[in-house]
Length: 88
Picture 1 (cartoon, rainbow, N blue to C red):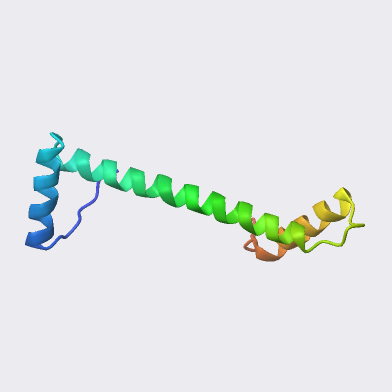
Picture 2: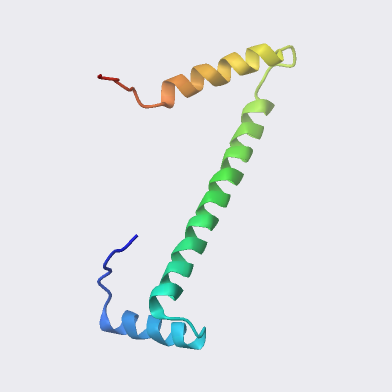
C-alpha cells in the first residue's frame, strides 16, 4: 500500500530522527509503527470481546442450555450485522 501522510515539519523531523535511531528508512519505520498499532488494536478488541462475552455469560440464568446460549448469540449477531442486498 502506498499513501501520502502530511505531517508538520516538527513531526516529520521527529519521525526521521527516530527512524535514524532505529537504523531504518523512515518509510519502513512508519510502516512498522502502523503495523504495531493495528496489532495492539486487534488485541484490545479481542480482549474487550472476551470481557463482554464473560459479562454476558454472567448474566445468564443457571438453567440456560448451551443451545439457548447459541440461539441468543445468533440472534444478537443478526441484530448487529449490516443488512446485505445481493444483486446479481
